[in-house]
Length: 374
Ligand SMILES: *Cc1c(COP(=O)(O)O)cnc(C)c1O
Image 1 (spheres, rainbow, N blue to C red):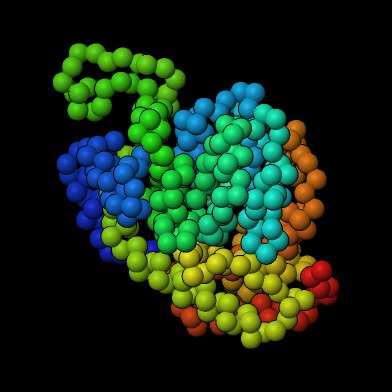
Image 2: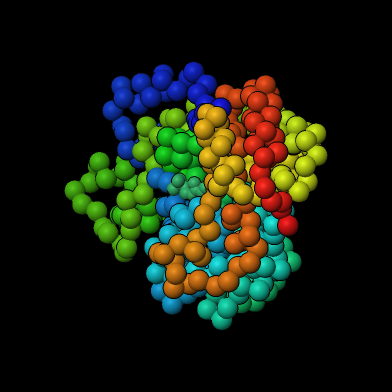
């Protein structure tokens, strides 16, 4: 309970890592490619490209979509700063979009309002793991040459209708960092729309060297075909990912049960002006976190921390960050919810009793909190 998030080990990870250490291929290798095939099978798609981090996945997916200097990319301000940094890494600029206060996700209406003449891409963030439906805008996007790049860092395992997030035909990016639903230690993946997307992302992740690791071992040279980055997924991380993927159902099930327990206990409190749960569409979502909105959030945060409860804040809005001040635009909903959001501890080591303890403590603190949610 003192941790807001932590990775879950299935017990197979040490053997998996030992096997990589013993066979001596630590970098990109056959295990990375096996991880890509297993991810593709899990998602029900033809191909997945594994990369070093979720941030690199977003950066490379945007580059593969042709985004560069002079372009603008629509992103919510309510996201981890990595989403915005990935946009800047391409040379493009962000256009911050507003969110729905009930889900903290962008909607078709808020994205449409944020579009500009130079918008080349839109990055919906699947906040908390919830799928974002922009289908109403797809015709407009096609007409204007706008690509959707999903930031699905929170949403591994979630569904969009009856298809997995990542399996709906969009360019989708996952993170496998230490606290994500699936972890590689550090890692990420791009789900390409086409073989051409896949070819571009593979080229960009591997310094744009034209030969793969097998060819390079057997030849005296190689050709560097253009700009490229060092953003492959090492075999050590892929081995962790393979072990985690094999046990994913258990993690998904525990996260689901804990989120539902929070929902039920919070519902019993019946303090609608003091605590509101951010909705996740739980029937389709593997929850990444459990976020509530409370008045006087900073005080509630410190009181719960003092009781040893690992609450967090995901995230301080980006349009208010000094680094992104050039692209500031007023976002009243994001600014209002930004000072209310509080993430309760959610990770597979917790029990339903722990959820009771957290909600009881939250109730105690809220009873003595002045003010109410608007
Ligand atoms: C974690 C995260 C990222 C970045 O992923 P890394 O693997 O940590 O680079 C991007 N966007 C969101 C919303 C995230 O939560």
